[in-house]
Image (tube, rainbow, N blue to C red):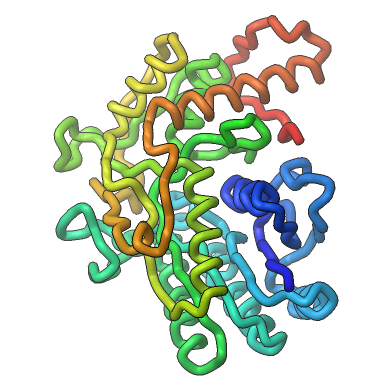
Length: 350
């Protein structure tokens, strides 16, 4: 039997594909390449370009490849964009998840791991937050994920489908072996933006909000290494394969860092200073959110990369690799420093 990974050409899905391969298991990948990178998927992994809402395509994949589990990553993820264009997010994240679930049930898929988000909690009343906290999303992105959670829970109760919902916190880092990293053009992840600025691919970076009720006035987040997160999906799938019941689980390290602390850590790791500018708060950003992940640990998840400087180092190595590929494509020597004022992006390195 085989696992289908939707969004497997993206940042988190792509690292999960690598985690499967590292333990000798080959999944099937479905991605529409709207944000994913084709080169992120190794050539020995069956890859299909298509939409998770395409019921005919997904049905064919389930039937032809004997799919018995789905790991669903495909989604839109930019919180401020969801505030501006909520219908885009409800369609991509909720309506298409409905179609995928419907196809999975008809195809007799028995296991489903859903990529959710700490955004479902909004501004929790206490932190670290555990899975019993009342969800109160501050953005259409968070609400679109929560609505999908409810659909999955109700579907599991009505059908022979067991699931794990993983609510993960801020994802960072890159594959320690240098095989993959965050390559999506225009990505908004804090560490990536800070590194692009440190490497002179941006002239400066904005810090959004300085008046939050946090020690230094900037948002506090729990950063989890993408490779540890990929292994969390394997732990969730193994739990379901071993007969485990449906669960909702947090994935984070239980330690929060402010935006300013992250920026200072990037400066230290990169060994350069860079300009930051103060900007107004962004809609949909909670002040502070940190995970209690005890339940996921009890399932067998063993974080190995719980170290902010190490996460930044891995991401920095990847950004340098992207910059080298881009310079080579432009015909510049690989040692030339790119001092372009605007952000630029290269395709992923296989």
